Length: 65
Image 1 (cartoon, rainbow, N blue to C red):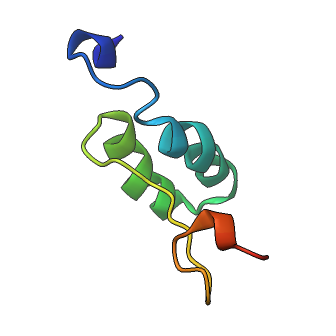
Image 2: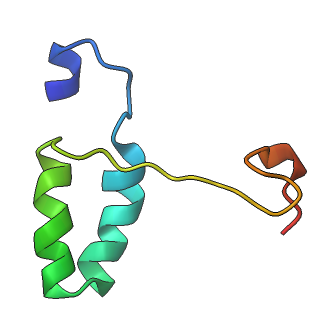
């Protein structure tokens, strides 16, 4: 709802909140949860996922592993 008020692209926070945060909540230390969860939920930090492989760089079509 907050994203919609500002005409932001859908699912802007999907990777952080939908993928990384559940893992952090289950497996993270109390210190990690304290450091990362609140800023992500409040939009103070945006998480992303990066891909790179030797010989392919960030070209996902050429990733072999």
